[in-house]
Structure formats: C-alpha cells, structure tokens
Image (spheres, helix red, strand yellow):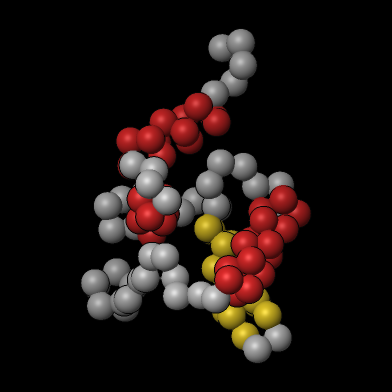
Length: 95
C-alpha cells in the first residue's frame, strides 16, 4: 500500500541511461503538452516498447512522506528550497 509505509520507492530509480533519457523526454513532453506549471508528477510504466503514461498528478503531495520532496532531495534541493522555488514561480509580477 502506498500510504501505510510498505511500498518501496527508490530514489533515484534503478534505470539505464537510455531508460532515464526516454522517461525524461516523455515526462517533459507531457508536462509541456498539458500546459503544466510549477511541479507535476508524471507516473509511467516502463515497457519493452517504451514508457506508457499511467497518471499525471498536477497537485502532488508535499509532506515528509510524499514522493516529490524525496525526488528533489535526491537532486540536492532541500524541502525549504523546493517550497521557495514553488512560491517564486507562482508570484505574479507587479504584485
């Protein structure tokens, strides 16, 4: 189960270079095609034919147990910096 602590979430994922490139390209393509902004989580199944989109989460959780803060932490972005980036990105110029 995802929320009872029994699910395994590995950051960074165990992917080959080609798999990582393929998934990154697919995620960015979907993000742009849907007009997303800020942070969104793209969930894929990796198949023999390539990535298959499972879900787009445009409001991913930001609690200590959530996946997005863990992914940013793996990229050396602290929780405080992540929230700061999201606030700055949402600011309206001139306000």
